[in-house]
Image (tube, rainbow, N blue to C red; front, side):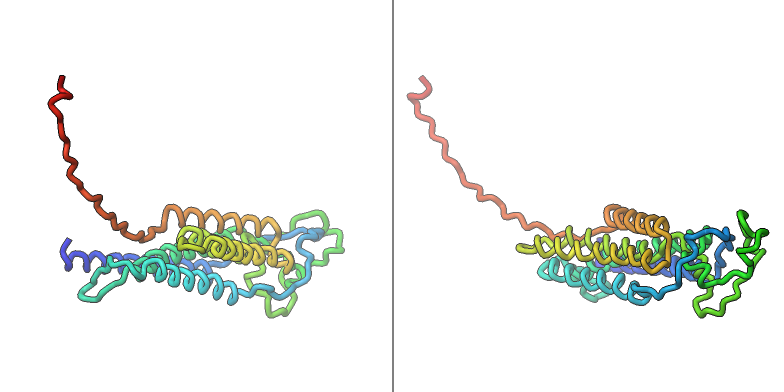
Amino acid sequence: MSKSDASIHVLRKVVVDTFLLAGLATCIFITDFLWMPFKRGFFCGDETLMFPFKEDTVTSFMLRLVGLGLPIMCIIICEWVYLRKEQDDQHCFGIRVPAWLRGAYCTLVSFGLGVCFIELTANVAKNTIGRPRPHFFDLCKPSVDCSSPEWQHRYIQAHEYHCTSQHPGLTKNMRMSFLSGHSAWAAYTMVYLALYLENRMVWRGSRVLRHTLSFGAVMLSWFTALSRVSDYKHHWSDVLAGYGIGLAFAVLVWFWGTDLIQKKKNHTPLPQNDVALTIHPETLH
């Protein structure tokens, strides 16, 4: 492949990756801001919706900051350490592209696509199911009088009531309990990071360190998932579903969607020693 063909190949890959990420980002925007969730009703005696409203232990900003920042930082550092001495550099329109930079780019694009997949999956589930959160009654304060016999032992449709509360958190988000986006996001980003560290931190003396870092990443995701139950933001089944989907996406994207640049092995040719074979005449008798 000539230098011009190689440059065009690299440029085409970057353009296609950018187009795919932009398309997925647009779908996420539509499902997050333009798609109104299904309005599900409730039963007056449903105790799973009677929990008090609490603030987030792990805020959305902190979830995004750690979920994106930590893997990106680790991937760039590990790729530089692993491939910094690799001489397999390529050039794109006269610009040298080091092996570690190509390795970081390929891994980060795969990771980013998985982030978009998990975000889009969570948004579709939330809007389609429309399950009220555990603090629904405290946040909404429905207009129906649940002590009245006419509302007892029957399913109250969404058009039969309206929310009377003026709470600032009274948004469409209170109907988006299933599945837990926090749990799915945390599981995907941190499990993917753990898988990456276990497969990329291979230099001498790093075994205990990489096991510890991997365990710490998984525990961050586990803590985030558990906090969604203790904060009364999700039902336990929402968290279980979200964490399971995040875990599945992390494994699938890592094993079938991530291409790592490996070091080229420099084999030293074995010395070709001439072996003199002497045949004595007496051995022929």
